[in-house]
Length: 436
View 1: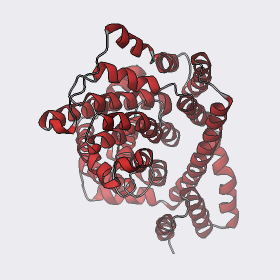
View 2: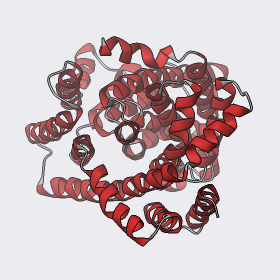
View 3: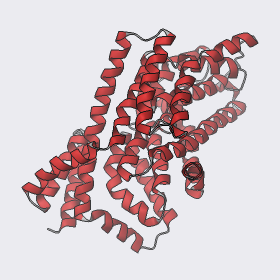
View 4: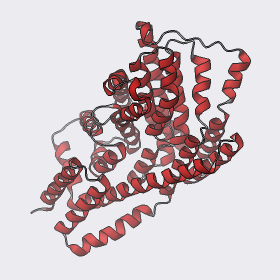
């Protein structure tokens, strides 16, 4: 058998293992090891199993992942973010769909300290959905808004997906953060516009709610956001101001969130222990998958399948835009079946050479890829954010209700993807400006 045939056989085996519900990290490592053994010999396969994971884990930038995770989990378990929704609720309740809009702003603020769409959905789901239901909001609008707005968590820095992408594709994490910030803000205001339009057309979705608050009460509510604002300003002013690197930003963010929680009076041994345990388990899970992906990259590079695929596609004379449309469809389908980290790390060894050959910026592709993966978080049958919201709201809404609620947000997301493909400078403007 030729090397390409062996690669095709083992890629098929990989998808079979994933369909059989074998953990994706284990599947990646097993298939890569077996492929290298088949193509070469036991010594090379065993040597790669020792060298490749070490070289990957040796990346200094990788240490920012547990640091940013710890920052987010501390903020979550010490309830530093609860004031975000309260303040937005007081200030925005008079708008059509004001509580839903407040939920979107709350998710965006939470995103700035977590980098996780699941955490955003879980936190805001507990706070915002019951409040909207109490004011007789449509269950579809209430649950769909929070499930969709949670996806902003992976776009607005710090984003764990962008850190992993930056390490594998060798792109600047800081510049990926800037590109993600732009797309995150576009998503934020697009969701708000969608809510305003839908409620204007159908006021029954969100009956008017005007929370009576004096100027002093509004200012007091705004003052409840100071813990998050202090952390965000401290971390990102230093990061984008050049005072410290992404790795240092994560460590400073974790320390700052601990200090702010202590000042706020919500830091406890139990909260700190839960944050540490969740950081360790999440980091371990991510690293196993990432090590498996690095082994798969080595296997596919040695087999030549990435170059062969790129050459075959380019030989058809397809335009870069048409190729990118195909890539979008692939990730939309994968998003329906796999969680984002697995889908990204599984496909990057094949996709990166192809994107590079078409002339698209790998920096631009990283931001678009994260956006695509987050669409998968709200599409059936997996729709992880939808299941998170279902777990939070219980009998208040069915799964089908939540999926119907996210439909219009998915439509908006697809329009944003089309806009980013048509005008790549939307993503690249700020990173290029910062790079100069």
